[in-house]
Image 1: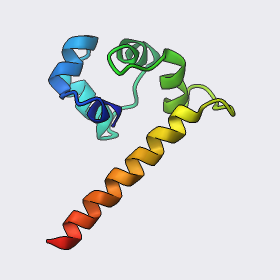
Image 2: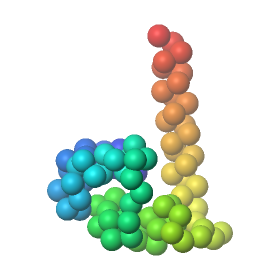
Image 3: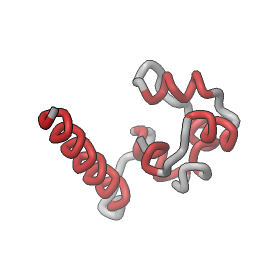
Length: 90
């Protein structure tokens, strides 16, 4: 989801990170859980720190200073509501 927020295609993120597009797709669909080495490779192209991605993936526990994750969640909720409104309008 962070990939889409950055406006990146799977192919672009794949080129930037060295992770295959098929593997990235499986991670996004929840069919695979990213390993720590994969998260490290994705951090820079997604403009996130390794720590932020590790926390987002559940490898590290969040603390009170993790407002960025909350911001991402809020943005996603808003986008999801917009899509649902568009679907309902059809």
